[in-house]
Length: 161
Image (tube, rainbow, N blue to C red):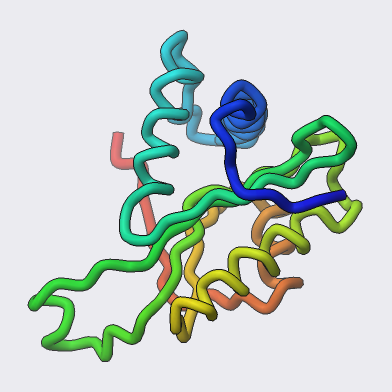
């Protein structure tokens, strides 16, 4: 397996990974709020690429032979004057997406991608790396905890109708 920086020639592979993840999210969403519209593939790819390009963002791909089996993208956090009144605002990296294809899970691909983006963030002087994980994604939460991530900020929701 080889880790490479994103190249436009792998756009369709990245779209496939994004769709694969969304299918999983829709499947595990007990509230049935997550959906996959016909526009999802193109629009979510566009959104992901914008997120990867902002504030020193990057996307790495895991390539096994000629197959893209995983991707990770992230960027530096952005703070404004309001953040600074109650927070130290140390330089931090934010993981926007981490996806490993079903066929490549439990083979070290995710761990290797995490290492690569953390190395990138460290080179930029980051002190922390943040990631949001969908609460029903138990496998994802276990994965991140296994890789040293801890819960720091928890968002709570409640159905009221």
